[in-house]
Image (cartoon, rainbow, N blue to C red; front, side):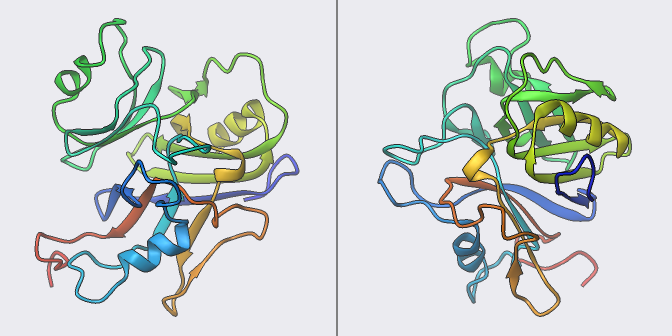
Length: 239
């Protein structure tokens, strides 16, 4: 999609048909031990892995880009918090164990971060964003806008489809307006700038970025990934 001048790349995924995960790229705490999106795709595509190769990978939450490369703000997978810090206003992109996506405020009652697993007991994964771009089909509380930069976002429409969004150079207000025009009801901004990247698997099994202006070579600790639906033994339903 091209709107307002900047290039915006959007991929729509039905979570009832495809598996959406928050994937950890490497062990944390060791400098240089994280992976770029292409290297993560390579690792996820190795022979003898139970899980099918990913169809799509996009950068996810924020991380310490200086020393450790470890995630900051909330990252949780299958009830285990990878990063601990939670702020009451932070919007979370959440996927339940029943493959139902939602965007919620981290802690609406300003209580302690220990309330997270109790408040969302059926969470498959959760990742905190910077702000809610769209809320119930309207612009979120965007506050003072930023200079145009690369941005990553994830959104949900009324039917429960998930939208993976990366823009080359844009600000919050323009991106929110574009997402609303697409019919997205709720959207959260994830990490951006030099972390914004998205790659997809083409018909030949190679991974490609939709643009040379994105930053898929940046090393990141976590990514949102899409794979064919699979059971515990790697088999697709009905096969």
